[in-house]
Image 1 (cartoon, rainbow, N blue to C red):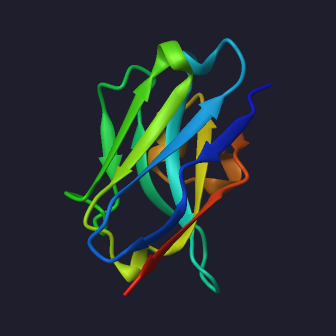
Image 2: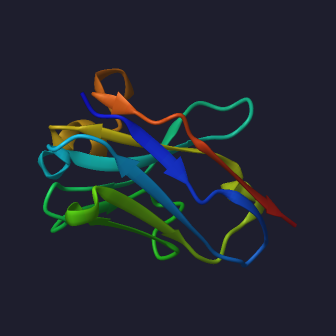
Length: 126
């Protein structure tokens, strides 16, 4: 069993930065591919970024490529999402997700995901 707890959300102005963290419980964190997803009001949950268990491979949605960076520290059981040049359209609840299969995370197979966090709200003001 893996529990995921996100933190780092908040209110930021357009052009600002935030770093989200996702702390995972359990001893097998390094066995999981990790990802970040987001859901804006009235919209479906969408893929943001994914990272392989080793950190060697990363994937991004086109809408965040070049602005967001996903990383992980397996010694700390933590995955991060550094968000720069934030835009109002980035406003959403951001969720951390974990699955043993990278294709599930990077392929945004939401219904197949092993674990989800409860989310953290990011609000970007214009």
